[in-house]
Image (cartoon, rainbow, N blue to C red; front, side, top):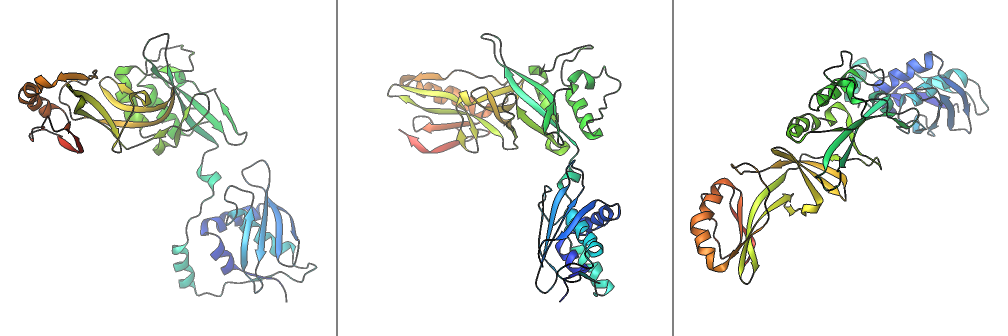
Length: 370
C-alpha cells in the first residue's frame, strides 16, 4: 500500500499560517535532501531565517496522516518547515523504495474547511515574532566610598544570530540632542522607547559614557516609562551575570508598626511588606525623590523591581525605630496615636496601644503581644 498524506491531515497538524508560509518556502526552493529513511519517516533540510538549515522529520501513521513531526527550529515541530517538507516530499518521493507517496486531496466541503480555519490556532514561529535584535537594559547599583548607592542603566543589544551581546548602542544617540535616534539594529518601537527613557536622564551633548545615572528626582519619571518595558519587548538584566531582573506589579507597602520592644519599652518603627511578608532593609533599596519604587536586591545585585505604596500624607522620610518607655505609653496613646493614624497606615502589634479607628489604614495584628 502506498504511503499516503492528506491535505486535511496537514491542516490538522499545522496551523493555517504555518501551512501558508511553508508553501512559500517550498515554492522558493528552501527544501533540500528530501528522503524516506524508512517506510514511515520523511526527512529533509529547510532553510529558514537561521544561517543553518533546519533538520525536519515527518512520521506518517500506518493508515496515512501525520503521526508526529520534529524540527530543529525553536518550535521543535508543528511548524512551517514541516509543511514545506511535506509539500516537497510529494514531488520528490513519487517513486521510492517503499512505494509511491500519494497526496490525497481534502474532500471536506468548503464550509467545513472555512469553519475549521476559524478554529485553527495561529501558531506563529518564534523567530518571526521576535526581532533579529533584542533590546535589554542592564541595571546596577553604583557607589563611591561611603556615599549612597545610585542607580545606573545602559542599553544592551542581543544579536540572535550570533548569540552575543553588543555594547554599540549608547544613550547619547537617543537624547534630545540627537536628531536621528534610529538604529538599524532596533525596531522603531524599541528606538522610541529608548528615546522616552533618555529624556528622564541628564544627558549632555558629546557624552561618551556607557552607563548613565538616574537622578533621584527623576526616578519617578524613569519608573513610569520603565514599567512598560515588557509591552515594548525590552528586558531587564543585571550588570555582570546577565540574570533577568523582574519587573513586578506587586507593590511593596509601607506601614508604621507599634510593638513591644522589651519589658520596659514600646517600639514605633516602619515596615515594608511584599505580599504580606516583611522585607529586611538590607534586601531593598528605596528609589526616587519622593520615593516611588523599591528595588529588591541580593547583596548589591538587583533581583526585582516593585512599585511602592504608602498612605502617609506627610512627606516621605525613613526614620530609625522610636523607643517609648512604658511609663509614657498612655501619653503616646492619647496625644500622638490619633495624629499618626490620620497620616499613616498604622498597625498595633501590642495590646498596650490601641490604634484609633479613624486611621486611614489601621489594623490590628492577629498575633498580639502583651
